[in-house]
Image (tube, rainbow, N blue to C red; front, side, top):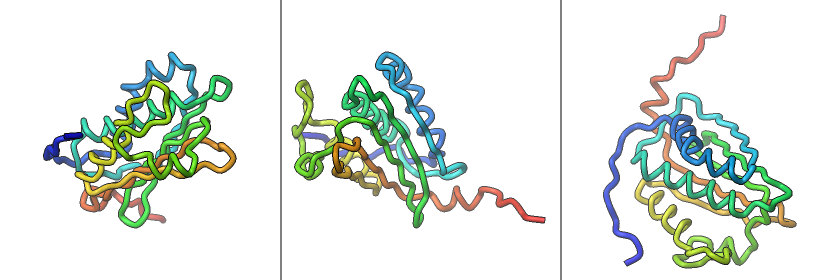
Length: 170
């Protein structure tokens, strides 16, 4: 069996804090590989519901994959968050070769890999974790080797968002 279905712990998780902790946990890998990280977090105050450990693992796996894909002369990685239609969108983009059409189609198949030493389990595991959280993951085929682009979508916890004070204009 590839992965046993386990019911995750579910709690409200602030999106920016979740991303921040994942970045903290991978900081040594970023430094050891001289990768310049850019973050654009447009989800201030927003929350999702889920298992903190499992969702951090997804973000860490995506960043690790990106670090491994980046060429030595272009060491850039970005993590962006946004909200659209009650959905939190997390995008990890790197300056590597990106995904061919074939790789984009097969990326989530268990044991499919483009890495010489890869096992092909990471993205399949990410998809399973996100499905349990009512989310999904997509890779965008790269045009002219413009870099890897992976997008995660998770339901916004509207209750937590509603509790954010809205500034009143004078």
